[in-house]
Each structure stands twice: as structure tokens, then as C-alpha cells.
Image 1 (cartoon, helix red, strand yellow):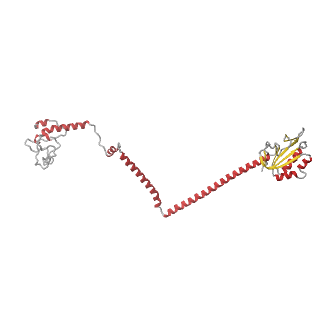
Image 2 (cartoon, helix red, strand yellow):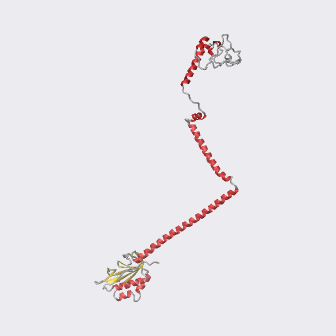
Length: 343
């Protein structure tokens, strides 16, 4: 390719071509003693196919350097220039067609390197071990800091802290003693309440025995009055009852009638005796709970009820027993006039 044909080829913007005279002199665009502009295509000037090795400033174009881009060889520059220009044009076309990406700063490069995370199993195990190690170190440092507060305290501060702890311990001991005392009082009160309830229950039972509303059992005597001729009247039975009460009888039952404070005796017109309005048949059997040693002599004293009944030809029999049961019950009555008196 001749110089005229090269001049007619299209040039890229900013591209410069060095023209040299036919005599093979250095290009006029090169500075004095300097290197030719290597940015320009080499094959544009047929006079620059081979560069002299005598120029000391052209290290890159020396034939002694085997790594040069083919400069200084016998290959014609006219054959390399079109290929180089085609490759450069294709690269510039690709660069111009691709969208321009803004340059990444340091934070962007760090984000790109960290996300998305790519963790392997080994990295995960190492991360867990490091986390456990950091947690243990944090706990150790915290406990050390807690104790270091006392290590760095002065002797006066330590003495004051000990005094406060002793005072607090004494207060807690006093509170514990007070609570124990309160608990003991409550237990005693509870025991006293239970004891009072038990005493009240026992008293109610005793009053029930006297009132005839509760069954009674115990030692006593059985007095049997046999009157086949009907000589026994209501007053005789009442006298017998009075002597038994005077001798200490606590519970009395005549046949199947319970004798209480308001028990009364009446003579029936047809013969016989009624107790609390209920007729009782002969023989009259007194079941009495009390002391046999007191009841029997009281009935047998001279002029007593036994002697009186014998004069009327009435048979009597006294039997002492250690276990008797009075099972007849009286209907509870209510007082019409007597009321509990205020203290």
C-alpha cells in the first residue's frame, strides 16, 4: 500500500499519523531525540516498516527484544494495519453498545463481596465456635468486672460494707424471730380453738344427757317395782325419782320413757300411772346411771322408798351393774319464760 492510499483511509477521531519523507528520515512529529508515538498505528507509514536498532531511546522497538509486537521484523506493516484497525473498531463498538456502569466505591465493593453470602459447612462451624468463644469471654469479663469493684475498694469502704451486711443479717434474724413467734401464737391459738371446740362439744353432750336428748351409758343400778295389786300411785313413783336424784343419779329411764327436768306423773282414772302423758305398764323398771355405791344405800335407808313400798305389799329389787345404757330420748322443749341472762 502506498502513502497516498493510506492518507485516503478513514481515521478515528484523535488519531494522528506520522508522515515521513521518502528518504526514510525520522517522522517530523516525533520530538527531538525522543521515541515515536507508539499510540499511533504503525502500518500507516510505509517508511516505518523497519525501525533502526541504533536509536537508544527506542527500547520497546529494538529488534533485540523478542516480546515486541512484531516491530523490527520483515513482515510488511501494510498487512497488519487493517487487522489491527478492525479489532480496535470491534472493541470500540462493543464498548459503545454496552451500557456504561458507574464505578464502584469502597463500600460498594465491600457489599458486593459480602452479599450474597456464600457459606460452607466449615465456615458455619467456625462462626459458631467464634460466637461461643466471644460469649464466654463476655461473661468472664463481666464477672471479673463485678469482682473488680470490690478489689479496688478502700479498706474503709470494705469495713462499711461488712457493717451494713451484719446489720442487715441482724434485722433479718429479728424478723425471723418475730415470724416464728407469730407462728407459734397462731398454732397455740389454733390448738386452743380446737381445744375449746372439743370442750364445747363435750359440754353440749353433757347437757344433752341431762336434757334427755342424747343417749347415755355408764355404771348404775336397775330398780324393779312389781305392783300386781295396783297399790303404787303416781306420788310413790315421784318419791322414788326424787330419792334417786338426791343420791346422784345422772340419767334415768322408766320403762321406755326418759325422765328429764320437766317430767311429771299422773294417776289414770282407769288405774295405773302415766308419765309425761304416756301410760306405763307394770312392772316399773328404773334404769339409773350413777354411782351404785351411792344409789343403793340411798334407797335402803330406814324410812326410805324401799321400806315404804314393802309396807304396801309391793315387791322391789335392786341390781347393781357396771355398764348400763339409757337409750330413751326426750323431745327437746323450749322455755317459755326463762331466757339467758346477760353477764
